[in-house]
Image 1 (cartoon, rainbow, N blue to C red):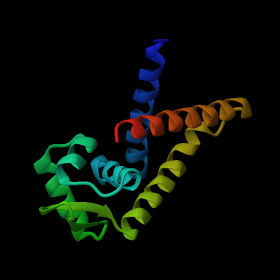
Image 2 (image 1 turned 60 degrees about the horizontal axis):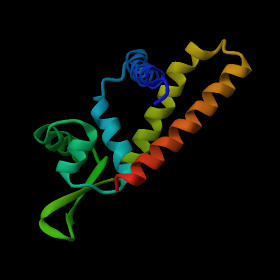
Image 3 (image 1 turned 90 degrees about the vertical axis):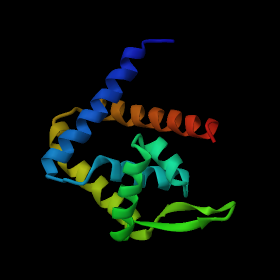
Image 4 (image 1 turned 90 degrees about the horizontal axis):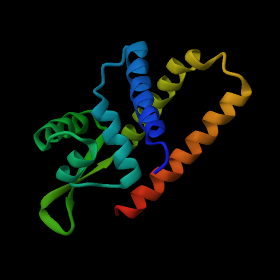
Length: 144
């Protein structure tokens, strides 16, 4: 494989940018909430165990998070048609709106850090984001 350190640096930088944005915006919402909404939007309704695995939290932690998010109107529970003992968790329109608002906040919080980039660097970032989005989409398709 080519230089895997470049990929590691991208992942590390993205994680750090998320932390910087959370601190800058003084947003105290757990990162797991935003991750969970994003997963459900991209992957569709999920059982709690699978959602916990995808979001990298324990199943009891995910159960608590889902309870909080459901009470806030961000998620909905429905019976799994393939197993009446299980629930599927899905995003509500309020959940979609909350994630969109957070993404807007992220952009506003981080834009000053990039304000002095020349157009050439912006083009590089745009192209890198396209490549990453494409790789992520193909990876998600192959794991379904």
